[in-house]
Image 1 (cartoon, rainbow, N blue to C red):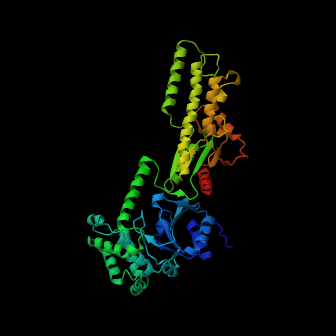
Image 2 (image 1 turned 45 degrees about the vertical axis):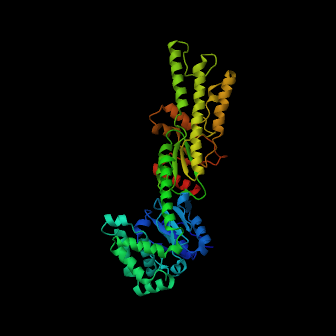
Length: 489
């Protein structure tokens, strides 16, 4: 069986072309192949038409090359179209594939129309500079029909000339296509459109005016039998998609982005001070968020609830009052029940409040991931790390000083942390404590050294955590981090 070797000198697009040809997949790049400067650099999408009988073998190639299937928001999913993303380590960019098993087009939100000419279009395909491409006659026919359907009266009023890219592509295709052969294909495969009306459609693209609205309206009537829904239903569907998008982004705070086919994940980065967690989280978020629904959270420092703020303020006032009355010498030491108890109990209650705030943020993150999003966490409650983001009461209260109140608070705190399950992907950034001290100059050296030493000496052999050496150059760490996260999606 053919196995494609990933060579460092080949980009992901090169590897994809070679794999499709080697496995004899029936396909073609049915539009946009002349815009190589755009899609070859990851700035645009690659639209491939795949024969349905080769769908399983094509999916195998996608898996072999490390492509990940993605799902758009539910209201924007189109039957017959799937999406794949590939991360190209050679160019450090993404390759986005639109895979069509049916030739559908129309408004980008609904893709309401289908031309049932997939098989003859694939039969006409010939090798191109990269992918196989359809015969120019087929490509001209499909382009003209697509553009005629996208006519906008409002755009014609405010724009005297056609869109330059569309005009250039039309000229490019007309020069390559044979007129006689184009008309023969129309009569053979699309007789309901007719050669005379096709000429009218081309003229409307060359000289756009208000008459183009009549051409579009007539084309819609001709393609009525090949539409998913009626004209009115399609219009309402588009408006509903727009409304849902605004609700998603402005009210629910979710982006109208794709989601991994196999579901969302929580990716947590853990490490001592100076390990570069915040920088890594920011880089991962900026890398993934333009393409996938992504959320960045800081479970080490969650937003404080009003009750947490009230407890903290009350504790500070009680400390101040106690100092004024000279009733306590050192309230910042370990908790003891023999001294004044109110500030001590408030300290424990604040620990419970912090646990509750972390749990509430965890709920938000888990729900986001369950709905298909990617969550990037800066710090995460991890049982192996005792000094950061975990339970505090058991360390503050000695067994001899426990009573009913402390036991209640201890169980409440443990309950919140008990509901926080391990992340789907745990990445530990390890850096030598002395390097951490050199990097983290805004904190006391001993404080930084102690926290970094704990992580440095962790034994995570029995866990599923991935360990990265964060003492290297930033670019090397980020490259390994992106590769690791992509392989786990």
